[in-house]
Length: 89
Image (cartoon, rainbow, N blue to C red; front, side, top):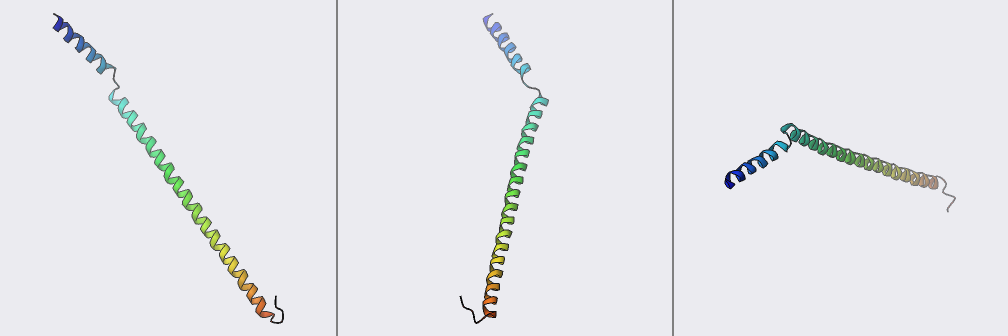
């Protein structure tokens, strides 16, 4: 009798655990939300990397423009110095 009662109790507890678990749709919805979250983070990461690369390219262009302006200024100073040979600084 005790064995039968124990088997019935175990079956009842097992049925309770199975019945109280999440449904297949809930599990799929949770997994989809997780995947969507991961995709959003990956997109933000790629956008951030692209922004940093664009800023680096802009900085490189500005540095190149500054070097060109410096070279033009030196060239102009040399040209003026050659144009006025009587004056030495």
